[in-house]
Length: 129
Image (cartoon, rainbow, N blue to C red; front, side, top):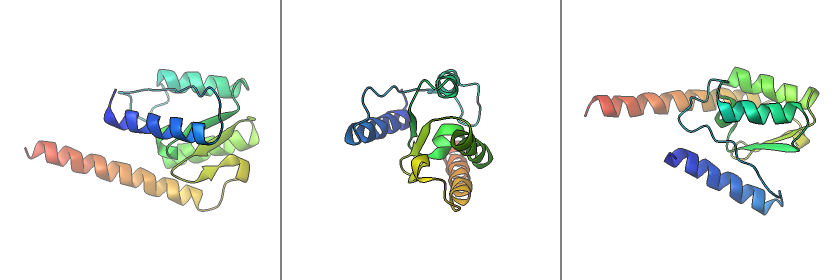
């Protein structure tokens, strides 16, 4: 398991414990791009949410969950209007029980840009070695 996934797992488990969420189930798609919806664990998680078989979904950040700002906004709106599921993005301070504030789409755009920028810098480092 990659270091990034281990870090996310640790953050999620700690948050769940601190907030009394019993028996958290982690859906891990290590080695898959976050911008695709064909990730096996992601699809399983979304099926459970759609079937009302889970109370809440947690992620470290919204892009960790759905990858792009446009898609994250779409999913957040769906959760609020169609599914009876609470979504929490720990590091983004998003909790659908409290509603979605206007700055959330801008925050998602920044997160998406930051991820792309970091990825490009890492590729450049490896290319220049």
